[in-house]
Image (cartoon, rainbow, N blue to C red):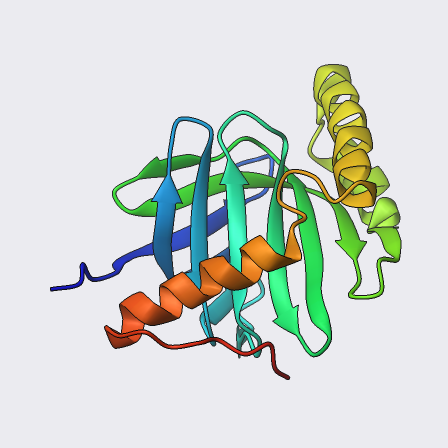
Length: 184
């Protein structure tokens, strides 16, 4: 008999501890001392402004326990699109992954273009929430490292592994061998 999926939530906070975003349901694929890997498809997401929406595309997310970023591989037509958040190292308690969002995002498109997003938001929020010099230095260093990983297809930036991980999630979900297709 196949082992079922352990369902978890993901809650993202701002630096002052206020709620930012919740992913209602994701399947836990793997956890070790360094990272937590989850996958989902069409999960409900709730924003701090009350907006709720459904993620349209399946994804695999890696939350690091010792890095200041997380990486989401989104399965799209033609390959994997990566969306990365600069964030505190995560913790997991009572089936909930928790982390602090630090505004800056790195995107790597299916055609390998890399872009940094939300720099203006970061400039405003580092003053508003008083991130402090130590966190600013950590984020600068970690963003540089994340960009290097993205350019060199290292760490979480492995399309085949993202697709295979999502297939593992789908197999557990339906309880049989089932090939996942990159769609949408």
